Image 1 (cartoon, chains in turn orange, brown):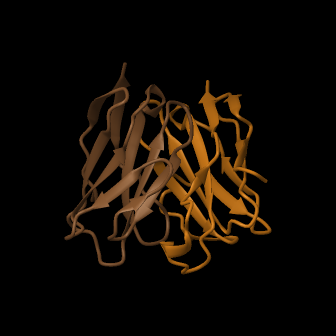
Image 2 (tube, each protein chain N blue to C red; image 1 turned 90 degrees about the vertical axis):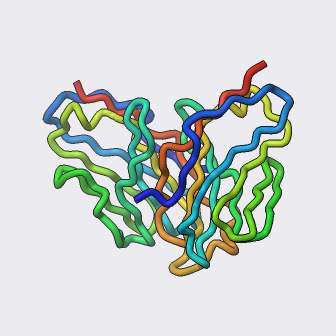
Image 3 (tube, one colour; image 1 turned 45 degrees about the vertical axis):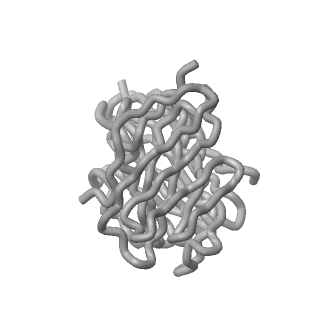
Length: 121
Length: 108
């Protein structure tokens, strides 16, 4: 697609429910990233995919959070048993990066989606 | 363990150049300097990146000091729409870690 697409754009859920957030990266982008941004705060790195593999899961806040990516394309971030502190904007980004391809040919950096605003009530 | 240091906020008059500084004194030889900005309630937007030479594109110019320990992002003619948080990031590859950035306010 032309850009990174995230769905839903807004999600209100009750405390304790599970939610799934979806990210469709730019076609051909092999790297995909999830961040979250609480109100008035900076971006918190969650997880990074190179293809379908996640080399670094250390940013996931707890074991209630999981993410997967299939077919080197769409990614899903799942939050189980949501808590009020999970309320935030969840941002997805993708980039061209291929394995150890250096930034010399990375002319566009990361492209971010518009995010999913999650509200846990 | 912040790799970059930026002032928390800056103001700039509309039509004037905005010069946003960033210190990265521990930068490694193969690490690039990236700049992104985030306009309120939107995802961050890539602006520019560079290694050691000055870079210019349609959005901005990036000036990196000879010792690579600091850099300046220049918006040559700031407009009200340039009001945003600007992030300076040092990285070679892998995920991008965003700090607090500089909140630039362009005033009429």
